[in-house]
Length: 230
Image 1 (cartoon, rainbow, N blue to C red):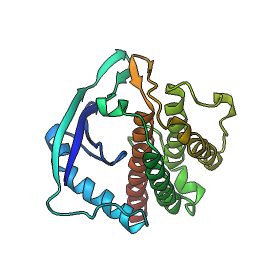
Image 2 (image 1 turned 90 degrees about the vertical axis):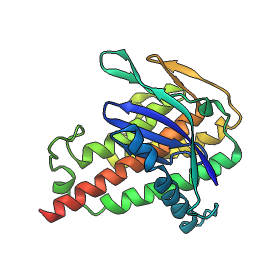
Image 3 (image 1 turned 120 degrees about the horizontal axis):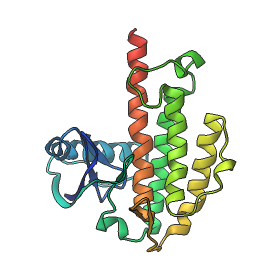
Image 4 (image 1 turned 120 degrees about the vertical axis):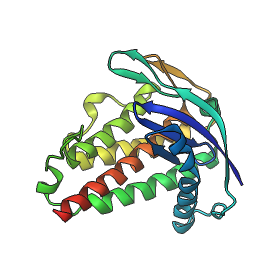
């Protein structure tokens, strides 16, 4: 089966190959070529996760082929903000099937995240991680929640910032509950907005929300394993 990729240099030294047929499926690497090379493995992994979790999709197959459909180069709109891609694919209105897919994948992604962090002692959650922008695992968890809220804010649809819970697990739960409740309202919408020079759409919100939590779950898993070794 052929899958179509959107290629993006999201930030310096970080290229992503997005798989349009599987929103939130991605391969990330330090170069464009590496991201493209890793896309087949990312597709096979996603298909396997979906099938094993009870959401039947096509079976992963060695003959998976890829085609680069779109490419975007990020650019600054201010000294501290890089504009990321709104692909033509992101302009396609969401369908009921997209929402079913997203709800399932968000569910298994959240379960994977909580399985890693829920039994960690506070000292591990708060341990400073050298070079980590969010300082520690606690900070990464907060970042996951606030980013999901921020994606909704890009469309002008988020609840008021001051209503975001301060406690991290409550924050994650509240924003995810909001996402699951309001995603179906975006079915069929061709809405686009521009914030800080960057375009947003419902499909981009869905793509980025699924990706972001999964990417940081993998990151947290690496940190936890490294801490256990020391």
